[in-house]
Length: 121
Image (cartoon, rainbow, N blue to C red; front, side, top):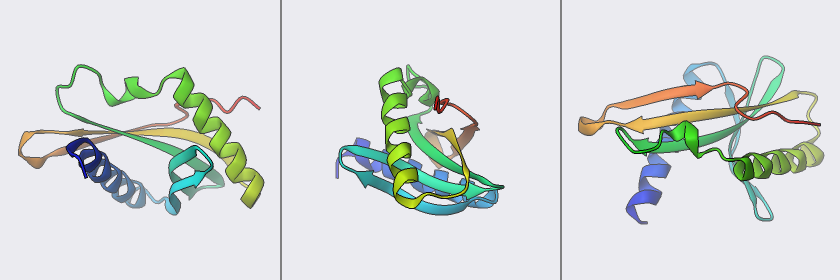
């Protein structure tokens, strides 16, 4: 596994731990359908959250939040539509971003951006 993949994997682990502490039930991780992937599918309070996790080193030129482009948002919406079609939950979809920044010395900063992507039915 290369360094970037390892950073991403650790960021995703930190994001899942954070979501659990915040009362989310993790329904799926790295869910795939064809070429589409959802990092984390979580449920809480009548909603199903499709969560994109972006991890960066603290002080990087771009913040994790800047990594969700229009193309990425469209792919996430498409993946979510497939997930909903397959599992048909009675929950309203929401799209969140969990931004993870790794600081020197091992400190991790985590921010959740609610409704980072609009579903646009």
